[in-house]
Amino acid sequence: MPLRATSGDSNVHAFDFEEEQWAALKLSYRDLGLAMPCCGRGAIPKTSTLGNYFFAHSRKGPCKTAPETAQHLYCKQLIAQAARAAGWTVLTERPGSCPQGEEWIADVFCERGNAKIAFEVQMSPQTPEETLRRQRRYRDSGVRGAWFHAPRKGVYAVHTDKETPSFILEGVEVGTAPRVKGFPATLPEFVTALLSKRVTWEVPQFIRTLYVEYLNDACWACQKPVKQVCGMTSSDDTHWWYRPTSVAALSQTLGGVHLAVLPGELRALGLNEVGTQQVIQGKRTNWPHCNLCIHCTSPQNNFHVGEKLREAFQQLDRGDTVTSSLGVASFERIERDTPRWVYRAVGSA
Image (tube, rainbow, N blue to C red; front, top):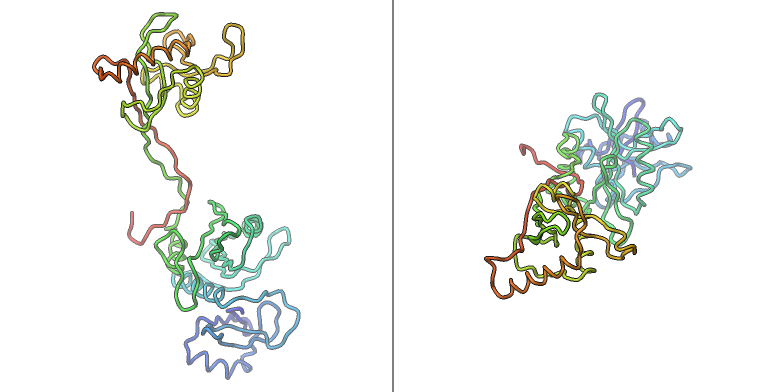
């Protein structure tokens, strides 16, 4: 069900016609020599049961064009009209080929200056691999591709990234512009925003506060005061709900700190770094993570640190918080969130 036919060197789009004009075209199309762009056979203007205008082959024969649903046709029309209103030259069912010789037909092809964009409406399930393969053909042809997928629960996930803009329609009913899932916009509004560069691929950043628990102590080797790292918490709450006092528990806890916090971040807080001691007294250990003295880098014995932690917890349980050797240090870190497409309405910053 293409939206386009040709008349000599001119293109005729079904969505350009009002009701009376379309009725007149049905009476006069033979005089215009309308042809299907896909195969050159005669084209007949028709109206679907849902009210869509489209062109059909005058007679059956071999043709590469696959049949389209009314929903597919309707979305193509919405995209084409929005792109044209935004000042782009629009051609539906536009054929092309990449330098490797692979052919493609864009649902809606938009062009302005040197910019070329192909919009695809994918109503049937399509694997991410197939989307990437078809996107590569566009990229090799110097064309930017953008995809709109119908919602399909339990079927292939939609692949989207900076190079393959892909979006999901929340439901398509002919006569009502569908909304784009996850965005405050209908399909025409979203296409306009895309073409106006108001939909951008961004990596949001946020400030995260990390809290590191420690024990005031002295290094066994250099005897200087140290802050033995004992764990992490989600706030500066000093209740210490988790108490790693055994060698295994403390090593596992420190292993988590080692993965989450950089050595320089610990040192900036005046805390010991966290490292590993694979061999203790000539034997390999299953629990290698431990504190390294901030002054002399000597590994701190988890057994002795655990014993001092147990005493500190007992002191805390008695309510003696004034002289408690436990503490929580915090610092802020700028982190990156999941990359995503961001939509900005007209007039937004």
